[in-house]
Amino acid sequence: MATSTHAESGSPRRSAEWYAGSDRNAYIHRAWMRRGLPDNAFDGRPHIAIANSASDLTPCNAHLDEVMQSVKAGIFEAGGIPLNLPVVSLGETQVRPTAMLWRNMAAMATEEMIRANPIDGVVLLGGCDKTIPALLMAAASVDLPALVVPGGPMKTGTFQGVALGCGTDVWRLSEEVRAGTLSQEQFLKSESSMISSKGHCNTMGTASTMALVTEALGMSIPGLAGTSAVDSRLLESAHASGRLVVEMILAGRGPSSILTEASFHNAIVALAALGGSTNAVVHLLAIAGRLGIDLTLDDFDRIGSGVPLLVNLQPAGRFLVDDFQRAGGLLSVLREVRDLLDPSALTVTGRPLVEHLDSARVWDHDVIAARDQPLIPDAGIAVLRGNLAPGGAIIKPAAASPHLLTHRGRAVVFDTIEDMHARIDDPDLDVDESSVLVLRGCGPRGYPGMPEVANMPLPKKLLAQGVRDMVRVCDGRMSGTAYGTVVLHVTPEAAAGGALGIVETGDFIVLDVPNRRLVLDVPQEVLDRRTPNAATTAGYANPKRGWERLYVDHVMGADTGADLDFLQGSSGSKVSRESH
Ligand code: FES
Image 1 (tube, helix red, strand yellow):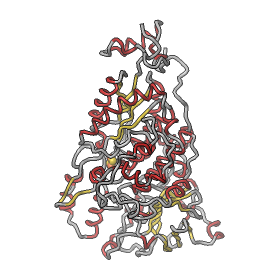
Image 2: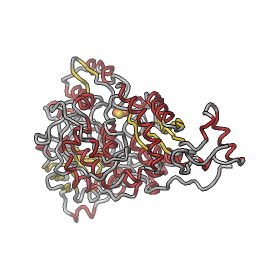
Image 3: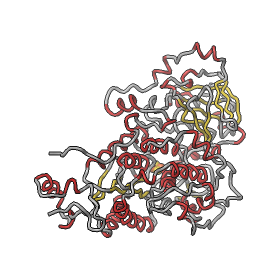
Image 4: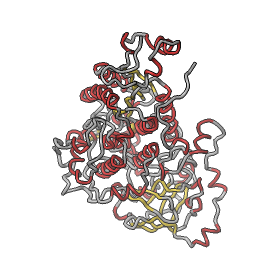
């Protein structure tokens, strides 16, 4: 007969609510699960889900089944019962209209499956951009012991003797084709070199950023994030993660004891020192929202301000994640900025993050700069406000052109992404290098889903003149692998009544990053008379049914993480009713 406690701790297991006892319901729960499980599987030992986002349609995560096997071995070895739980997976380059539309759906579905099933803890396997954020949001709302095993970046591919940065070099090469400095034939030839192995993008894009920031939050084994998908140490760490989650369950160490204000502070410091993706802002805000932590956009500016950029990785820099790991990885970066970290923040190990930094060293200062010789002294993400973004907008100065950080230019407005594609290369488009390109209708509600389109391409005729950057303003996001003087996440978005919806071509826009200002330089009495025109509003999403309808009705602004309003906070792990 099943018992309700685990031999080591004597504490009742959540899974015992399903399996313990001799009544018909316990019989049913056990009997249907037996199929090869050992006879002692129901003696009170922890049952652990491996929330596995492996999918052939998420190519960056396709190898996670192999990682899952190592996690399973570690869990078994430590006395737990591992259970593979395939979860909604999102291939950044594959799903339309944008993977971000489905992040909250993946988070909601995973949350409910963690809560609904007889498990005591969960190991989260993610990689591609939205998968780790969705898994963390889910785990935070259930609050069972959880840790992340990131799938790791791919190895570096080369083309014509040069290392290719996955993602970043797609933008660079395609711009070279448009500028006429690379042939279409050579461009297509680079295609099979761009993705060189299993794993996610190997620049400091969103996937690498979120894996590293997750470790800085304390939610992965210290030293694991950034390990290549082809490195045998990934499987070693996956095995160790399996062992550790059992220990976490015995200790009752859940996300709410790790994800605190202190850990978000450390994540923001790490984000700045790494020069990480702007997408981390919206994901960290959403994760914090699940825990009731009052993290705001301004915290990114305040905490990140004065943090030096230490990591010379694409898209803003030169190297790739392979080089970053060789040079010492995240722990060596955090050791350089140790005095800026909150020493009270704990990790999945039960020990503070700072205690894991003692033996870290930087082995290559070309890749990871010393604290006293930073690449940029102040690398934080800047939060801009003004009549064009009263709720805030962000810019990553480290990825921008210094001469454009203070700029006043005439707006050239595009109502939709389709409008932009149709007109951007028109030889008659009235635009010059001082213009400010404005793209609206790309916020969470307007698109829907807030796609990565803010880094809009420059007009072909300006590229031909040698122009390589312009000020761009958008209510959407920017790919973490992109770069440029791009103001993004403008809030409120145009479709939610933001001033972006009434900007007219020819209006002057002022960008003043040092003073954190984004201003539509038009008299207020003129703005008061304006309303969005029919062409503008026609581009806003108005779905009739399904997830898109639910999303548009409930999604919040980018300034709070673009989660659904009813998903904020935690429901815990309790399920009050039996299934039969
Ligand atoms: Fe998956 Fe870049 S497309 S991480």
